[in-house]
Length: 185
Image 1: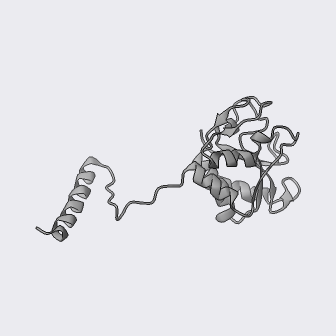
Image 2: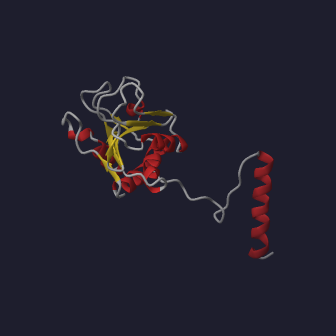
Image 3: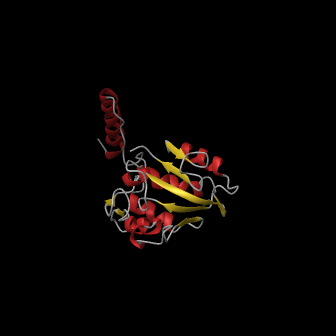
């Protein structure tokens, strides 16, 4: 038998075995590309015009835990740093790829220009998804401050479509000036 006759039989055999076992069969010709890892997603976000991660906190303290620095650290393979004054002080947190992908797609898929005010830095409630690396806050949408006529409802709906299950904004306690998008832990 030649390679040309063996290869199709081998592929068919793998598919049949997978069907019997109830699993998916893949070959190098049909395998889906791997999803980007968190470092690659963070690099992509940092290089995307229209996503502006904050370089300062509202109080101006602790540059090592700003949204931008959280992404820079993640792009370099490190965990993102929480702020020393928050409920989970000065810890490294792995940013969730679903959250990073959601942040990126708000720009690339939905066309929003966003300013990300916080990821894991800042001060949040003790059980906040920020400290799990699964949430971010947006304080500007398309150049308008949230709460000042920015299209926050549409952006909140987009976050939900992207998989966020905790979406808060104006009208929710403590969220009058920003949108919070959080993915499941």
